[in-house]
Amino acid sequence: MTHNRKQTGKPISRAVVKVGSNVLTTRSGLNIEAIDGISSQICNLLDQGIEIILVSSGAMASGMKKMGVARRPEAIPKRQAIAAVGQAGLIREWEKAFSRFDRRVAQILLTSDDLTSRKRYLNARNTMNTLLEWQVVPIINENDTIMVEEIKLGDNDNLAAMIALQLDADIFINLTDIDGLYDKDPRIHADARLIPRVATYSKSIEKYAGDIPGALGTGGMLSKIKAARKVTAAGIPMVIAKGYRPDILIRLAAGEAHGTFFVPRDQKLNRKKCWIGYTVKTSGTIKIDAGAAKALLANGKSLLPGGIVGVEGKFPIGAPVAVVNGSGELIGNGLVNYNADEIRSIMGLKSGQIKARLGQKTYDEVIHRDNLVITGEPEND
Ligand SMILES: Nc1ncnc2c1ncn2[C@@H]1O[C@H](COP(=O)(O)OP(=O)(O)O)[C@@H](O)[C@H]1O
Ligand SMILES: N[C@@H](CCC(=O)OP(=O)(O)O)C(=O)O
Image (cartoon, rainbow, N blue to C red; front, side):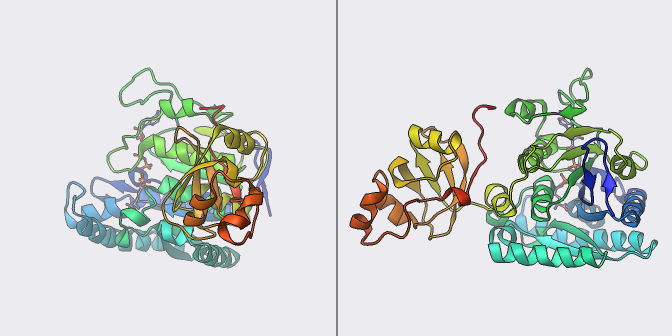
């Protein structure tokens, strides 16, 4: 069964719901009232036939309360240990809350390695799809316990956006401790006004948002805006709304307008391109000249060796790399047909000269357009 959503005009049959630490924790620990309220609403949506994937923050905040720590420790092992303590209680409370409605939950903890490896990415997707088929609610968080800088996802706004792309959700609902995006940080400016709708994403929107989170959050409003950029570029709408508002999920699913709605692009990006453009951690950088940038941006062409002016990093064939212009601004991500040393050796050449230089030519293109996703949009920046 699908649900008609007036705001998007499209039916919702699958939603990613992210709940921030500020909603899920109080001064004394986990906010059981919020967990009960949100789980009861999710069960209502499940009864309507809408599949829900829950991304739950709160492990760090809850672990700190449990261990009697007032501030996040600087030492990484201590932070990881605190998250481990907190995650146990967090999932227990969600499980308890859903069991009141005879619903089961499953815990999924991810790092960016799990999402960058295509094999692990697809495995995780298959598992989550199986859980959804079984009507079990997947509850996802970053695997903070083993998280170090190299495999860090950063914040759960970003993680939830990637999950929305991975599972081809119809909407991403981001529940936080504030009504939505204001035109200025409302903690500093009393005259800040709520923006109900963002029709087209542009860099200027990012200027509205502060990157200082609430007492217990990570990333602040800015990380939510960046998440909106990802999902809307791939054709998925996002709403930022206040998690404490009674029946907020039910109201949103019924098409009521609350918070800030980010209108998606008309065209959906295919799944593999979602992964290349908005999920993988790139393992190198290719710098291109102005002619190549124009060919990629305006004409949707593949990247040929002739337009390449620099290569950074050491990466194998098939690796995800970032493509940047002469000023270092990101144009997009792509999967390479040649390794880093080969690209260094053929950059600036015509495709017809590749064989003479390398002794063989497997492809004309360094990145074929089917494996290239334009994510930078200079016309909006
Ligand atoms: N322009 C803005 N509009 C709304 N909130 C903002 C803005 N700039 C900064 N914020 C702050 O961002 C906070 C939400 O981010 P964060 O604490 O990371 O939440 P969460 O824990 O839900 O992820 C809000 O409490 C708000 O004070
Ligand atoms: N993984 C972390 C949450 C990180 C995060 O993004 O927090 P938040 O800004 O509250 O969504 C935790 O569970 O504490």
